Length: 455
Image 1 (cartoon, helix red, strand yellow):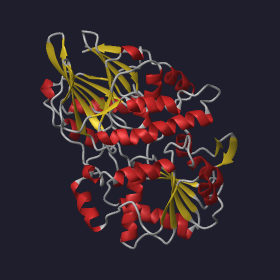
Image 2 (cartoon, one colour; image 1 turned 90 degrees about the vertical axis):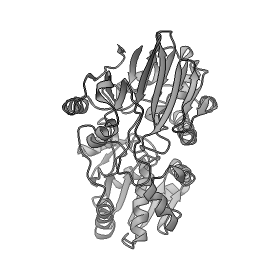
Image 3 (cartoon, helix red, strand yellow; image 1 turned 135 degrees about the vertical axis):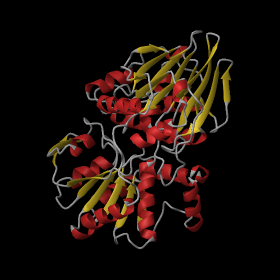
Image 4 (cartoon, one colour; image 1 turned 60 degrees about the horizontal axis):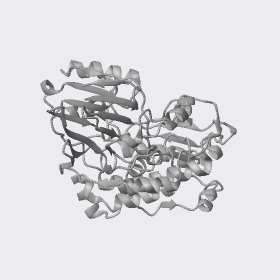
């Protein structure tokens, strides 16, 4: 058996891992779009390094574009087989893949043609096959699949495979993206079956997140400082799925407690609005404490000061508002979406602020702002940066070192033959490898892009 790493190898985006059995069967784990890698982005998104028509099956860990975004291109290039995922991942993928196709066709891809069309996305979605959590599913005589919840976003799963390979039974787990055990909305990452081979994400594997205990208090202070004391606007770039709902939940909690300053809050992103509706419709995936919370507050994603915006004209009107307000808008790394219009309008205002709540690739607009850029280019125009950059790390949906160690704790170390670290910067992986080695894990590999490893 070999594993080839065609994305998220010593970087965070573009998750694609190809498992090839001795009999030639090929299992693709995720098919994500590369984002924020400058000149490398286009090249990596247009070439697969393998023949799509030769794949046996595709298994998707969750709906985020850096894990799912090239599925329409895969289908366009000749893949006709099943794409396995959890039921919520299908619902969210309908939003994200169609939105991605629209972006491709409205903006193009620089000077190049779109990667794929809405028709390609629709065809890919026709090939999705849903498998519930915790129910073993026999793909064929050599491949058994089991999804276990990782608590990263709604529907996110670790992919657990039981494989018949050259007369032997082999076990493999691909973690997908691991959530946090302290997540307030979703179930925490669950234990997964013993695996010989583990492909494990490492995004924040070299750090420990700030405690969630005082999250709402910190958020309340930031809203008060920017919107009340300075009379400015607070822009919060956020991923449409997961991060936006966490932020709304926190603001809803403050409103319920009577602690939210008297300012308007806008969620300006059609995708975020629809994703929030899907969250509302799937409370069975909420953790126990959230189940109790919604008994008293049936809608944790709505409060009087909050307005959801889908129409373009309403979005444009936000930039004409003189009064202080909070605007939550996508995309999280600020590379696209309506957040760019709000940034272009408000970055020159020293009374306003941008609250960054998640990871930004260094070469993205968000990464440049985080690193102190005094001028940036937005939609072709140079924009002075006078607004303050604020950072809250509490909202990260990715596991930190403690979460990763806890996630792996269910495994018998002696039975693990190899751990591959993916989905992280090289320096982060090196630190995580060192720390996991100290915990007694052995044979930890940091795979290189486009290399194959015999296991």
